[in-house]
Amino acid sequence: MAEVPNSQEFIRADLVLLAMGFLGPEADLLKQAGVDTTRTSAIQTSNSSYTTSVPGVFAAGDCRRGQSLVVWGINEGRQAAREIDQYLMGGTYLPMSGGILETQAALSASLASALSTNSQSNSSVTAQS
Ligand SMILES: Cc1cc2nc3c(=O)[nH]c(=O)nc-3n(C[C@H](O)[C@H](O)[C@H](O)COP(=O)(O)OP(=O)(O)OC[C@H]3O[C@@H](n4cnc5c(N)ncnc54)[C@H](O)[C@@H]3O)c2cc1C
Image (cartoon, rainbow, N blue to C red; front, side, top):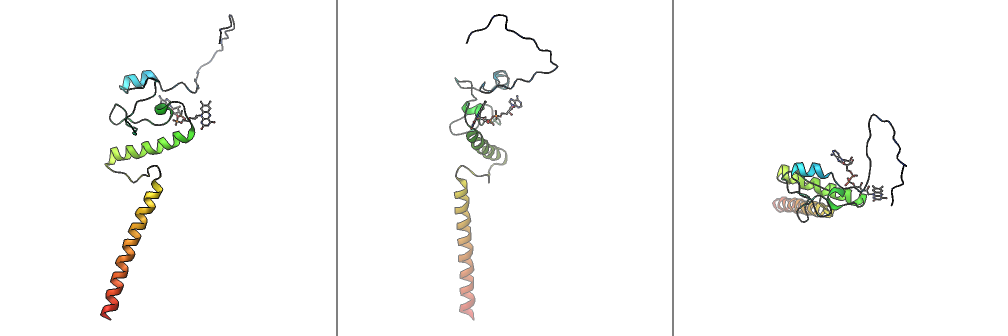
C-alpha cells in the first residue's frame, strides 16, 4: 500500500467515532491498569483461565485470544462469567463447557436418591401393615 500524494481530504465534524476491527485492545488503557499483554498485544490470562495479571480483572473474547469468531466470543464470555461468579461468590452454579451433561447427571443422581428413599419408606409401610 502506498500513499497517494495530495489525496488528503478534510471533513468538518463535531464528533468522530473510530470503528475499526482487528486492532486489538487499547494498549494505553491496559498499561494504566497494569494488565499484562502477550507478544501479539492480546490480554494475557493464566492457563485455561480468564484471570488477568490484576486480581479481579478478567478478559474474554477477541481481546484475550486475538481476532477470532463470534462463537468463541460467546463461549469465552460464558466461561469468564462462571469464573467471575466463583471469584465473587466463592462458588458457582453457572454451567461450564459441556456443563449441561453435568447438570443432567446431578439431577439424575438426586432423582434416583429420592426414588430410593421413597421406595424404602413405602416398603416399611407395607411391612407394618
Ligand atoms: C469486519 C469484521 C468481520 C467479522 N466477520 C465475522 C464473521 O463473519 N463471523 C464470525 O464468527 N466472526 C466475525 N468477526 C469476528 C467477530 O466480530 C469477533 O470475534 C467478535 O465480535 C468478538 O466478540 P468480543 O465480545 O470478544 O469483542 P467485541 O465484539 O469487539 O466487543 C468488545 C466491545 O467492547 C467495547 N469497548 C472497547 N473498548 C472499550 C472501552 N474502553 N470501554 C468500554 N467499552 C469498550 C467495544 O465497543 C465493543 O462493543 C468479524 C470481525 C470483524 C472486525
